[in-house]
Length: 490
Image (tube, rainbow, N blue to C red; front, side):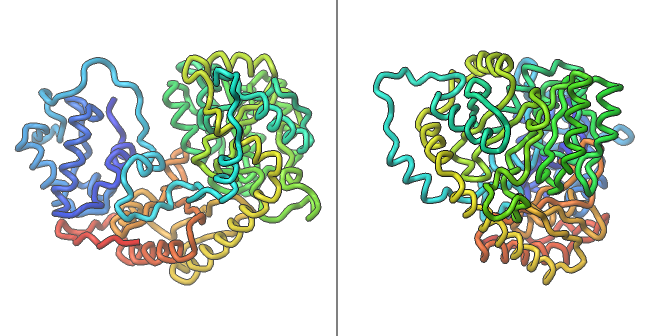
C-alpha cells in the first residue's frame, strides 16, 4: 500500500523530537518505516517540496534526508521519476495487515520525551475511588473467570444505568467490552464486509474511522454543522446507499462538541429503522455535559436522552474511560439481545472475556456513580475555562468557541493548516491533533482538537508552547535545515 502524504506525515510521528541535525532525524524515521515494511519496495515518496511543506522544514532538509537514504541503498532517486523505495529494500514476507497512521494512537505508542500530549483526550490519572474500589473487591472462588459477554453483576449494573436514563434495558442486552474501541471493532467485524458503505460524520472520532478502513469499508461522510449531524443528508444517504452501518456521536460530538436536537435525533432513528440500517450511537462522552438541562436535582444521565430512547434497534456503545479513567478499560455495547449474543460469540474468539477484577470495580463504581460523575464534570469545566482563557490571552487570533461539555475544544486557525502547524508545535514540545485526520470529507484543514484534561500549570505551559510555535509558523514557508531543536521540559 502506498501511503498518502497525510498518512506518511502521521507515520513519521514525532520524528523531530530528538537531538541532532534535522535531516538525520528525518532519515532515521524514514529508514525505520522502510525496514518495518510500511514503505514497501518501489513505493513512491513525496516530492521534496511537498514533504518539506507538510513537515514545516526547509526543502534542503528533505533533500539531505533522501540523499542519506539513497547512499545507504534504501532509496532510488531519478530525474523525472521522483524518489522511490529501492526494489531491494527488506520487507517482511506476505501481505501486511492494516496498521494505524492515526497520530492520536501513534503518540500513545511512542515515549513522550517531555512532549505535552494534547492529542489524546483522556483523564491523566485515576480518581482515588478507583484504587479504593480495587482494594475492596472480593474475587469469586468458584468461577473460571471466562465471561465472554461480561460478568453478570456488571451487565446488570449497566442495564440499571440505562433504565435510569429512561431506556428499558435487561442484562442480556449488554455486552461488556475492553473499552468502547473494542465494542466498535466488534460491531464492525460483525456487520461490515469489504466494500460496504458506512455512514460516518465529518468530522468524526478517528479511532472509529480507522476501524472502518481496516474492514475495507467505504466511509460515506455526512457533514456536522452547528446543530450536529446534517440529518436530512444522512437520511438521503440511508435511502440511496443503504449503508451496512451508521456511526454517529449525537451528544457532545467528538470533536466539535455539538448536541443533536431531540427532534432530529428521533428523525434519524426513524430513518434508520425504515431503511434497515444498523445505527450505532457512541455515548462515551454523552454524560459529560457542563450544564444539566434537566435541572440540578436530576442525574447527569437524564439530561440528554440517548437515541435508544427513540427506537429499540439503536445500538449504544459506552465506556468508563472518559468519566473515570482510560486505564480501567471497561466498556459495553447495548442492543437487541440476539445481536448481543452474536457479538459475545465473536468476542470469545478474541479474548474469552474482559478482565474480571476491572469489571468488579466498574460495577462498584456504577452503583454510586453520580458523585464521581459530578466531580469529573466540575474538573472538566474548570479545565475548559482555563484553556479558553489562556488561548484568548496568548493566541487571540485563534477562533475558540466554548463547549457545552466533553473534554475538547474545536479550534480554528486563522490561516494555514493543522497538519503542518502540528509539526511546528511538536518541535516546541506539544502534540496536537489536526482536524483533517478526523474528517473523511477531506475538510477541517484549519481545525485543531485540543483537550483540557491536564493540570492547570501544564495546560498553561502547553498554550505558551503553542504560542511560541504559532509565532514561528509560516504556512508554505518552511524553516531551514539548521533549525535548532527546542529544549523540551515539562
